[in-house]
Length: 116
Image (cartoon, rainbow, N blue to C red; front, side, top):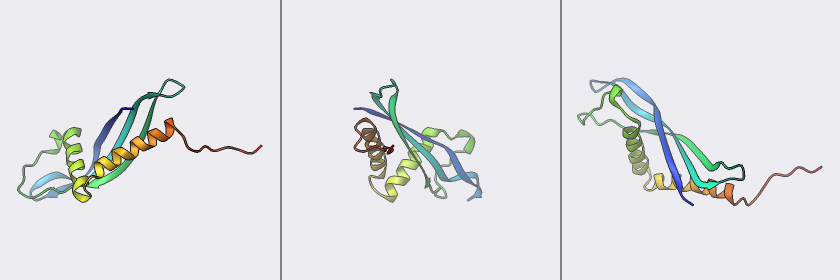
């Protein structure tokens, strides 16, 4: 089973002013979705999503990208780097968790039943 991961890091918190810069990103609200190449009985791809936040730090004097020029890809890179810096392998662990959720949808080990 192959899974495609989509990282959405388009929502951020900014400091209005910091170190002479404006709109400095300090917190990223991320949504990571995984979509399997396997379809369910309805013909839809199995998928799972995790959400969270990650702080990022602007280092004074380092190159600064104005907010209007930021892209999702740039913020995804910052987010992944910050996550792995905080706990090595955390990006891989997050994606593995999504893969595990999808695997449980495809191969369930439990279900909820109602007694009549």
